[in-house]
Length: 451
Ligand SMILES: *Cc1c(COP(=O)(O)O)cnc(C)c1O
Image (cartoon, rainbow, N blue to C red; front, side, top):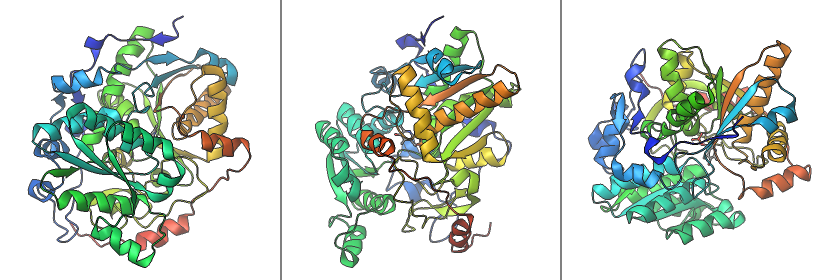
């Protein structure tokens, strides 16, 4: 029995799959933060190139992938699909476990799938520089890499605490030629206003987003770039699921359940949406998003209009949200700390096309360690939530006396997250359940929207 299922370079998908074309009802509009009216392409033009804005609003089912983007993707794609034979033995299941491994990209996660596409469209429209934010550095390093491929300058606002505590992702961004600033900086009004109140601020993703957006909005040659949540980002990630469909055919199986971890929703959508298309067309398959109990936007969030950032500068989008003033608990090791879920994932959950589960971090690390000791790959802490959900699906199937075919997305490796593994081994990690009352308090402060 093969361990790996590999595709040829010419089997890199030729289009992205846009599930907007197959939804039962159109998605809720994105609202201008001031007027509360639907945003127009012109509203977004200072921030994104027009081709990206068109993709964000498009309902075209199959969007062709430009040759230049396929050529860049070919540096690491198609990514391998593995049969996790040793892991199956380690957890003692009769189910068949497959995983798609996105850690083979140069930055080590699925994120460059969209970074290279975004860099391509920006370069094509004459943009000289892209500004973005990064927390732990995965997205910043993916965009730095993509900028290097397409001759674009990249400016990264990196949350100060990560800038100081996680130096190696910063080093990667420098190696790929990006400039990286610890946020809050004195380069923007947003940063200066925070520093005036607290000169030693640790920063947050919300503040860094505000800085990157302001940088792009105030420079003609600069656009903003986001690594998850938005429709066009999810669209670019669908190469994952399309490849996995071909690879599952090679294995002669079709998954009963497809699983991925969920932060903003991009790697989950990447693997799940092509299977969701099958499901809409009558196939039986379950699609499960796995999130941390400390940041449970899908399982405890409210489906309503909220801002994308902390400060309230971005448009209002309808999504499962914990409230934009959500503060992730400091004890949490991994990523997956965004207050909202992708609007598209939120809609699919609302329509019952997908499911969501939540697990505490220690159980996820435990599953990740079992995985490392059987399959070899040390997973990113984010990806460990998919592994934990896989273990639970396998256990349920075993209890029912069934053999289930389980496919999960291993979104990245954990080579730059080993400090988190150290903390886990030292018994220093704590589990945390984000309380429902905190969600309710936060939701009560949301802007009223009447449509
Ligand atoms: C960023 C990241 C995630 C979470 O983001 P999504 O948009 O939910 O996919 C998950 N895994 C890895 C390895 C990441 O770098």
